Image (cartoon, rainbow, N blue to C red; front, side, top):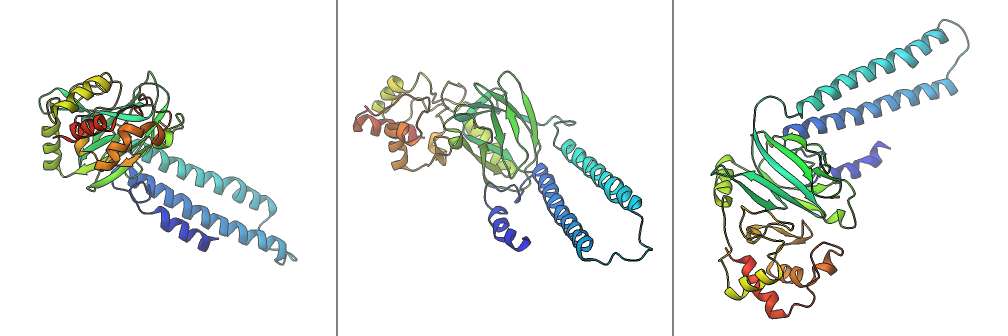
Length: 315
Ligand code: CUA
């Protein structure tokens, strides 16, 4: 059985979504618990199997072994109680290390929407700025993530950095993350929230401290309303501006598009961002991610799609 698990584990212990390849303090604790529980379970199962076999095939004649009372008392009460108490203490201690207590670190507000994520950061000027579907964090520094929802229950989860926390309408939940490894990772909504739940991912980028400062500097008050071709700007005003913004200091009912040019994915992790994919997404997003709350743009002519794409890619 253990041998059968090995190929399965090899596929799980790597990759941008693996909870067994931790890149943060809380995730390391969770990975440890997983290993302790898994190995502990295997050891206990081996002991129980051996006892079972002994009970069936072992020699039971003669006297001198422990009494049945002692076997039941130790095996049925004392040892299980000891194991459970140890696990409880270990679990509570681990859970405690993930709570946002002590220190007052930077706070990023996350709002789950059907089916995308909004992130609100403290900017360099004391004001906040918004991005969509991309979470940027500094390495080695604790960050409190405040998780909220604009509609139904979602769940914020970056497996390599920490545990899940639900985004519940009308409530504000918090989790502390402290990444210890630079890299691109991925987050995912972990609570079924409607037809496009699976397409509710987000990109996570953990930066060295100076690069993170540069990111904050760059995004603070970023305004790309006037960037790109005039025809694109006009098409954006007509078809997109009711819900989307091209400045990072305005949120919206749809994802903020100020920094779309730099984003590696489109549609909350649905497509890899390429020039071709952006044009496809603008015109055919209802086929690609059916039921998403953006009105169908199948009637836009090619010229308008092109103008919009060039406008959105402009820096
Ligand atoms: Cu949001 Cu599942």
